[in-house]
Amino acid sequence: MPNRMCLRPSLLLKTLVLLVVCQSCTWLEPPVETGAVLFQDDFSRVASGWDRYIDDTYVTDYADGAYRIGIFTPETSAWARPHLEFSDVRIQVSATKADGSDNNVFGVLCRYQDAQNFYFFLISSDGYSGIGVYRDGVETLMSDDSMLPSEAILQGSTTNNIQAECIGDVLTLYINGVQEVQVQTTEWSQGDVGLIAGTYTQPGTEILFERFSVIKP
Image 1: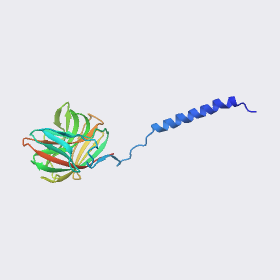
Image 2 (image 1 turned 180 degrees about the horizontal axis):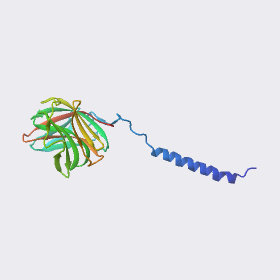
Image 3 (image 1 turned 60 degrees about the vertical axis):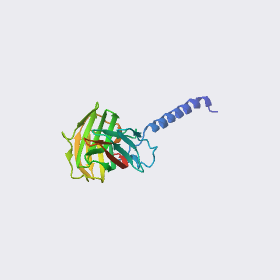
Image 4 (image 1 turned 90 degrees about the vertical axis):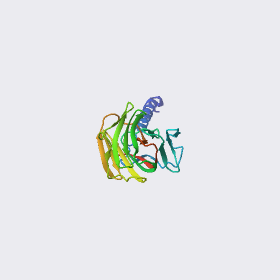
């Protein structure tokens, strides 16, 4: 008759090995494929996580299947975000000037750390574009000393398709499918994404954002 007491340690060891292997398997997540949608929002649900705020200076809120940023005062910027975190991303959104002066700015954010540290990609309704950074609360354009003229922008009260790529240390802005600006930076490797709009000396602009997507580049 076999000694069953001698078989049990071997069986126990095999069971423990199997458990360790299975637990290790749960730690190995498959890589996200290029082109995969990491986050998408058509702004039809007000519970999708974006900031909602209004005061005498600006409003950021959902608006009938779009996301609205309205600026009521001069020399003012406002932004909103979904409170997520990504590393390398391709951000796409459609933006329409609904009201106000063409002398404005609007676009997207990436690698947002806090209210004083993030990258921004901007266009204006009068045909200018640029990439910049908020660093310790100080706004600096990285693409040039000032916003650069862009023939790809559809000016006035119309819709422009904005694409921003944050890949490694390279930031690239596309407008209506045309690459307009590219810069290099080494500040941050990950962070939140978002939307931004602002005014210059003339008060009042209203931008409606639609079809926001974050894609794995």
